[in-house]
Image (cartoon, rainbow over all chains, first blue to last red; front, side, top):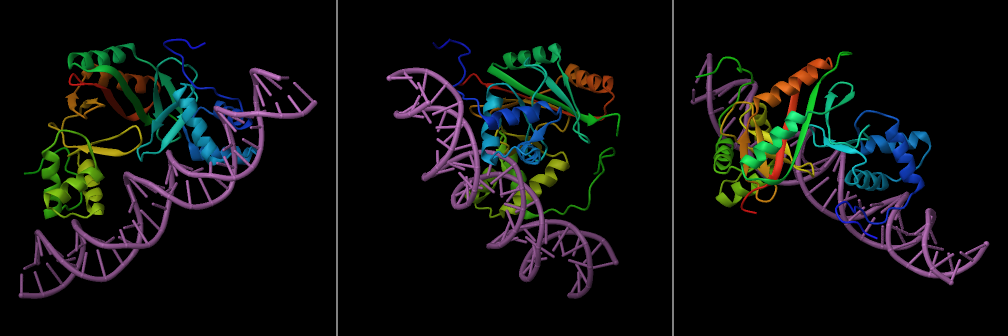
Length: 135
Length: 135
DNA sequence: TCAGGATTGACAATCATTCTCATCTGGAAT
DNA sequence: ATTCCAGATGAGAATGATTGTCAATCCTGA
């Protein structure tokens, strides 16, 4: 076969490493770095190479299974979200607690701004940072 | 002179290096990496150490004189904007052409979302990427 | 003019991320 | 169940941006 619009993806085989990674990610709601995840896997007893963690995280991200964003110092952090829908995050810069949010108005605004300036194939990044109640 | 609200800041002395850097930045409207800027300075004949470029870029950024954002691969890129006001960017992912935009509605939305979830000391990052007309 | 702290530059050190490549493994075919 | 092979993995080297170190140098105020 081979659909049209969302064909997505070369063959992707299930492996113990990927399963373990997905499990660890599902167990937390915070954004974690590849290094963090690698450490968690270690302490859980699941030995997975660091490079493998990076590779799978990339794959999962491009498959839309996890969201990625950059910390202020440029480190990439990942999180498996509750919804595959397009959404944004409200992140506590103290504890990392994350709330998924969406805002139709904002989406429209971004699209409109881009269109008005003749830009096409538009995407955007919107993240909100703050300090949550428990801090 | 010396504004009022944003006094901030330790002593900051004027130097040839910083002046050259500011000049180069003022000459372009694209977001450039520290490395790019360092290269431009070199080819212009102004010899400035790479570390110095990084240090000044940081200083300028925390002084609000330049805007910083991260490329998809985590590299920090800088740009001196036309206004010191809070604003966002619409960036062409092909040529780097940048348009400064603002959206009061979006600002309010972000603030509201944060407040509704009990978050304080809120900040946000909003960038729009697209392909501009000349591509 | 002088002193002292800010600034600089050359280069080492970090550190996250990617690359290499030999080995391993899932799974479709036989 | 056995074979075959491209995708997947891991250990470690390599890359590359950014930061740290520290002696030499440059403003600026007294």
